[in-house]
Image (cartoon, rainbow, N blue to C red; front, side, top):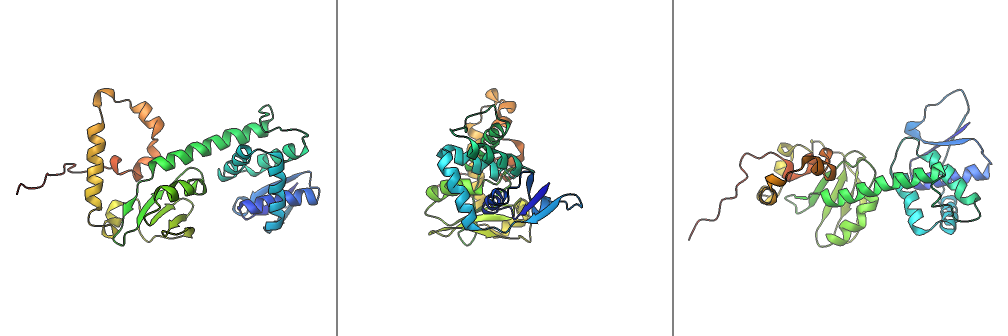
Length: 266
């Protein structure tokens, strides 16, 4: 078996697929560099991302797949599941070898894998769009820390750019160590390292705008007021809002006093 080692990028994966066809590698596996365990058995080749090769493979897929199916391919890649590259390669082989459309042939195991995995990533995308909670810093930057199961930042980029076009914001994926920064003009990918634990409110308090605590208490108060104890269904609640997201949600944080006192009478 030949193991093709790539840099983890979509362009790198497409380049690897191009090389599989170019060198007629019938028994090849593709892995990210950090997932590769080198062995005396088989051959290992390093793939250097080539945008021209990648574009040629993508064009072939565009010719054979509908736009939704292309989206499923991309979302499956973004899942970053260990070894997901091999089902994607087999999927591409099947698609390119078929005379007609096979994107809905769920009897084929790799088509089914792509369909099921892309659905999981799509659900995570919608959850992030719903669960992102911005906090305002003293320098007027709205920031949010997230830890999604899958690499969904590329998928939520347009949603937040369209919805929050009038303010600077940063959404940072602490698991993958990169984020999206919008500067009122363009969105850029940024890589950052924090010297503090951003999930610990006590360590970020000095960075926040003086009114941020007030806004969070107002949000917590609203959340409490609309909650109807008699209709509480924790099983359903956790299904729609899994506990792994709670540490980043202000409404789920314990507070000593959630009341907002009314202004004094004149």
